[in-house]
Image 1 (cartoon, rainbow, N blue to C red):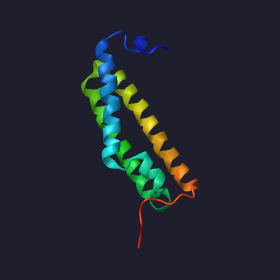
Image 2 (cartoon, rainbow, N blue to C red):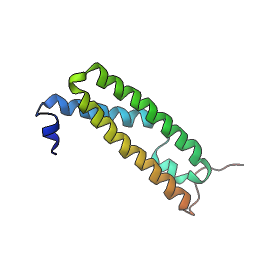
Image 3 (cartoon, one colour):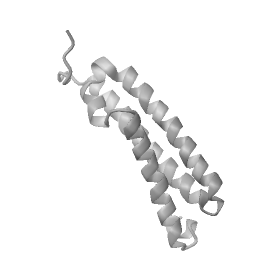
Image 4 (tube, helix red, strand yellow):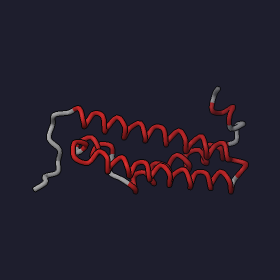
Length: 112
């Protein structure tokens, strides 16, 4: 199904989609380190990093859900954008964690 069919051709649907996707990226980024940092330092901090990814995802879901509730005419756009971004970001962190744990490269943090 083409995206233009989902939104019915309404240009504001695209704006709502982008706003919803953007808020997921912003909230997750605010709650934790980047996927790159997760990969580099997974050996020592993977559980803590992933804890904050999960917290960020819950926060993002609250905001996207609220946007969908308050603007019901564009609820599908908010939910589609938020879910799409959430899946992509979560997948990035899961991949970063797995790549970091399987790598023999040293992390960037030094513990004494």
